[in-house]
Length: 118
Image (cartoon, rainbow, N blue to C red; front, side, top):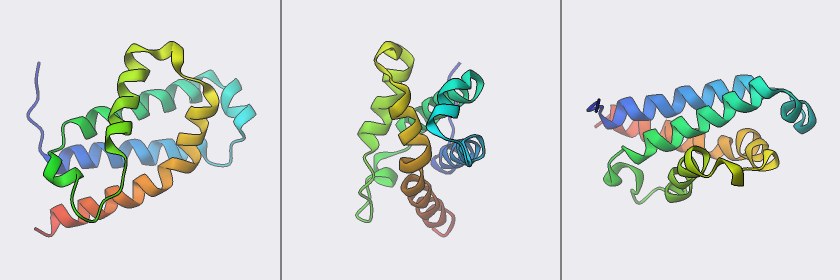
């Protein structure tokens, strides 16, 4: 079943996933994260959602002149998590969830603001 969601709805899905990742990984060490299967798998799934939602946002929105976010890598990560899961290492997931998510959230909020004000 295919859903025809708009750009703003997809942006909100990404923002929701980011906020959940922030809650899951707040004040957690890599060792604790890696040993907690529930947290690890939850973050993996939320990263998949981010990539899938990004894949369905129009290029005009994602690739505007104010943007340097590596959307192709984000979308590609979703494909790796879904289809080539054996290539994923926990250190990368932890890095994405605790460090790389910060500039992504800033960019998503910028895009959301732009969409809501146009």
